[in-house]
Length: 371
Image (cartoon, rainbow, N blue to C red; front, side, top):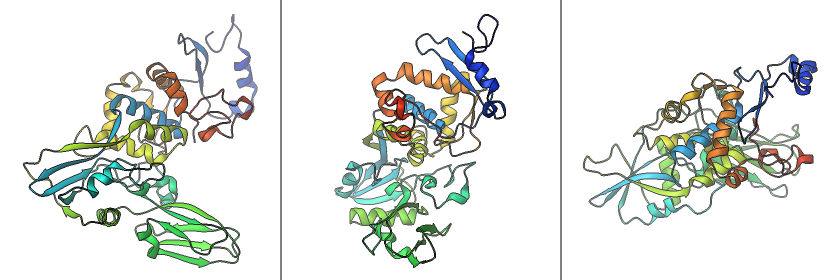
């Protein structure tokens, strides 16, 4: 069945699309294929380009399956005389609340050598192209960086019965200014755009606070947080020694990151995944480098159907056709073990960003929605 006709007439689904004002007056595309033999079941404007939003994370995950090994490279290092030199790879997991034990921190903490940090060159700006840069204080716009800590956010937590707000990392506690606003009905949080100065406005009465606010990333902030965590000094070095043979230190399973990218639609992890992959392609971290590699190799047949800009889908510049997205989904379906793929995708009425959707079809839909 080729989408719009059965024996010369329109299918019931095509008639529904044509009769429904929502579809007729909006930009809509749909492609349904049979996963077993690939034949087209229904096709409605699948050649047109759309903004994919968080569907972009499927592209990021596919890049991880093709270019990432079983474990993320967490840092690169070498030892010269009595000094250990290290640099970041974009690994997003260190002290991020999704992840527990951090072998990378133990590696640095227990090193018998003097620690010297070399800042990794990074092509990406702090926020991505086509993002809403005015959203810098919202958790979903955490800054990209070469060596993230705490997910590059500050956690603000307060129980309704308590007066004190807990701040993690604690180092930011003195930079939080709290104000009582009895005219407000809920709390609000803000941050100065280019400084780590945070404002928490609280209404009168008992109120619970549960907020993650991105912090402004810099080498100085990173070194201060890491030294505080390791309880030992770290020297900022300008470069690796000339005779330094760099090695990679691997820490967290790649699948543990990919699961949160798909199931929880974590923007920060998706952006950092592209940077982490690029650490294997050269010294400079670059999302574009990872995307270009994928588009010239594993996705070369989709070059006219896919304009891929970032890892998370926050960018309004991402453009993709339904045909291209179905192509990528089919690649994943054929190349990733079924049980694993379905475990990573949100499940209707059960988990992730579909846990409150399609509840009547609970457990029967595995998909990556556009949020």
